[in-house]
Length: 162
Image 1: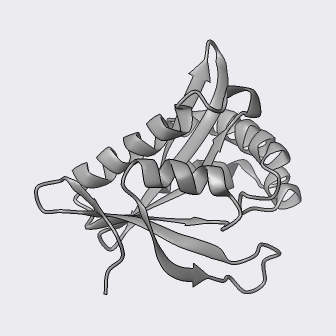
Image 2 (image 1 turned 90 degrees about the vertical axis):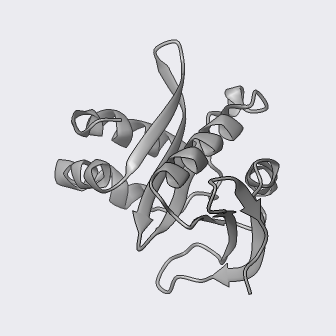
């Protein structure tokens, strides 16, 4: 998504928050009232891909990089379009992009109960590290850290690091 597509990002993100059953981090009320600058900044500091059915956006995923580590977040696919491989393709796109950016690894933080997303991530080589991330001051429960470690030749190597 480009910087001028902030309205589309906002609308799809709010739909995702409504339909994700609490698995996505984020507060709908806060995001619904966020100013345009919030959405423009999000698009300026991260890369967002969408999956579409015709003209309708039915999937979304976000990538950002910090200090050589990529982060995948906000993975969501419209309930009617699940089990069609869209989430897997979105994740594979992020993994390839992370590798191209030179990240040493790609991390995602997933609600442990969100088994479908954990399965998708495992299907592309990601592995749970066994670490939980707890963010103070949020109503969301702990998130399981999952990652893909990129080998020097660019091939993914799952598993936890010691």
